[in-house]
Image (cartoon, rainbow, N blue to C red; front, side):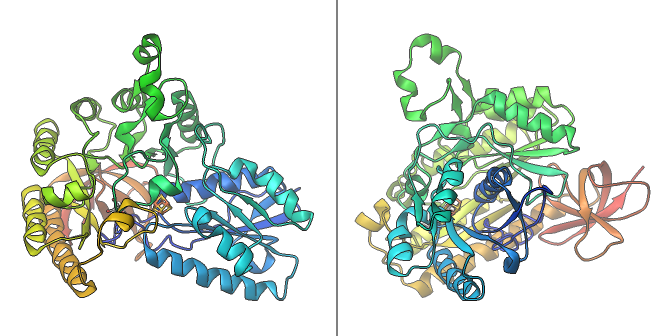
Length: 483
Ligand code: 5AD
Ligand code: SF4
């Protein structure tokens, strides 16, 4: 799966709307078609849904015409995502005219917000299920079979789906995602996630290790630990992050934080390359940096979204750090891990952003020289503090012009970073054929850069190969395998 080739989009456009066919059980009489939008966590959720439904008599299909159940796993992060969903639902309803018995369901981050409208007013769906209620799908589907509409959008304090082994719908057999936290407590004023995915909770380390062990036994060579804010991971026996302070001393003493989880994972699985995403600057700390420096099997890449280079805007966004603090974290990272890759998320045109704030963002980019990034124009999300309290007062054309300048600067820096690899030998984990040529392999180095090299020698996907880099673009390295 290609994740960062289009380095301007965190949400991988190539995966948007993807529906994939994977495990089948012969005895299963029914078929479910699942189309997924949004971030990696949401893609991972679709795999959990497929796993639950597989036990319920549903095999997955990529042919919508043969589906008994059509599911749309939605994203709410920007306005555009919402429009796409409505269009897809209308399209599914047209198909339903020829297959009236087919049921249509809406899952994911949009479920809570638009349930009434699409269920009752527009009658576009039969089933609405929020991100914490997938375990309830069998009962909800039973309700459908009895001819009723079914809804569960309740958010949970405990649900982590820790015991459910996802079916790997979006995987290349080499690299897989493993969720470690759900929800987010940060309340950035632009972000809808705390409302759509609920309060933050962490997953039992044992269930994380079991999942990785299982992946390893299936031949996987890389895992990405996923969470909205992985550095905030905290396991103290289950429950919400915010309730940790109320625990007795004994419980607090035995708690596992992110640095510890990372350390244990790296130690237990020396043959697996470990990545993680996303880090939040306010929670990312020296312990994590030192753990990364200590273990060669932890990839040398940190995704550290900054959103803006202006202290005033960061404050309005309710980001709980200053630019000086952010820079000092960048300096510490580079001190301990000199060859690290750092990537960003930046929002252009947030509420009241001036030309001077925008310049501060460009200056920060010059300071860090990110390897790559994901850049967006601000899009007000209903229900957020931004929508309630802050004006959306930067005209669209100015937002887009600033976004263009940010993307252009990132292109320059990406090219600069990639050029630093030319002439050097890097270790590449082969993921599969290059999309453009069956004569070439595609893989990634420890810094998460895509590397393309000619197939000579007896390599196969999952092998770690030394590649001498000869050439690059701002998004891709080219080279030759060396024996
Ligand atoms: N408008 C624009 N971009 C947003 N992001 C989150 N919410 C919004 C919004 N309302 C971006 C942030 C975040 C990434 C996942 O998406 O940069 O880090
Ligand atoms: Fe993922 Fe955020 Fe979209 Fe939810 S709203 S699917 S968390 S990107």
